[in-house]
Length: 332
Ligand SMILES: *[C@@H]1O[C@H](CO)[C@@H](O)[C@H](O)[C@H]1NC(C)=O
Ligand SMILES: *[C@@H]1O[C@H](CO)[C@@H](O)[C@H](O)[C@H]1NC(C)=O
Ligand SMILES: *[C@@H]1O[C@H](CO)[C@@H](O)[C@H](O)[C@H]1NC(C)=O
Ligand SMILES: *[C@@H]1O[C@H](CO)[C@@H](O)[C@H](O)[C@H]1NC(C)=O
Ligand SMILES: *[C@@H]1O[C@H](CO)[C@@H](O)[C@H](O)[C@H]1NC(C)=O
Image (cartoon, rainbow, N blue to C red; front, side, top):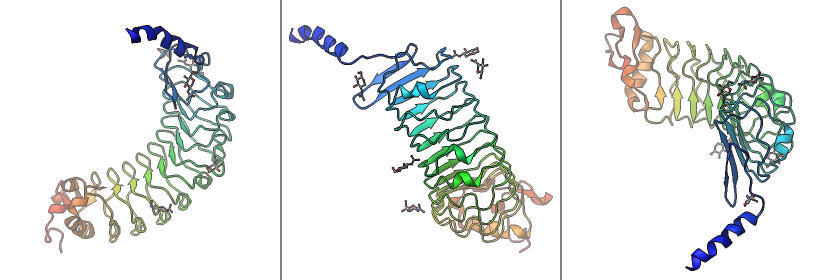
């Protein structure tokens, strides 16, 4: 009886406390510490300014047709911390976009049509995560970011990059996770990754890398995951992976490796069980395969699908697993 009586009072209390509002076509989730707005797969063509709660902390607009966003749009939500704009129709961003959102730390703009971006576009907010995956970016400019950037995660995968400027990485001394997969990179300049001393995950999968300089990773001592699969790597310097004491995962599958130089895998003491992938390479099973053959025998557990590391030649050993070769077949 009592609670029935209280109900209308509660209702009044809720509605008179502040002005609860939410943009048309969007959903708002309000909790004591977070105000989250989600506009998902709705026929928006413009930023949903009207009705956006001024204390919004997280805003997601995805699978819509919005094609622009401005500083004024975001100034209306000065407490914004997370901005997720996936699968929209954004082709550029204004340089001042983030001037009015001093708490913004996470931005994702995956699956838009971004190409050229102006100087300082990411300089005005204390970003830690920046995801620009699956756009049309053909060149990254160091001046997109501030000098003392706090980014720990940068994802530029699925773009059209042919190079990455060393000057960019010089600004990213806190970076832990860098994804450059599925671009058109043909080489990395020998020192470009040197400023990234905190890097833990590096994804270079699906590029056109054919060689790597011996000192490419020499400063990335904290690297735990290195993805080099689906490139055109044919020859690797013997000490390329020396000085990576924490490396737990290394994928070199789908490359053009016919041999690896003696010593290459010697210092990979931290590799996880099945953490090394060498499959889908055209291994030549002549005397020079001896180093790989011995290493595999000793470290089987560390290798992913160890029996699928196959000889591509000579003809007589084609399709044989490297592991299964005998001393006499190798001419030892
Ligand atoms: C945001 O505003 C709404 C409506 O005034 C309020 O109910 C909510 O508690 C506020 N949230 C925060 C995090 O201040
Ligand atoms: C976006 O525009 C395209 C083409 O006009 C249309 O087919 C699609 O349904 C629109 N998307 C949404 C979520 O309204
Ligand atoms: C996407 O944006 C472009 C302008 O950048 C515009 O011409 C086009 O109509 C937009 N497409 C949709 C489906 O809204
Ligand atoms: C990075 O973080 C430090 C410490 O929180 C802060 O002083 C600095 O302004 C931040 N840099 C940027 C570009 O936000
Ligand atoms: C590497 O990681 C360890 C453990 O997380 C940390 O103490 C050390 O400072 C890191 N080194 C660098 C260069 O960031």
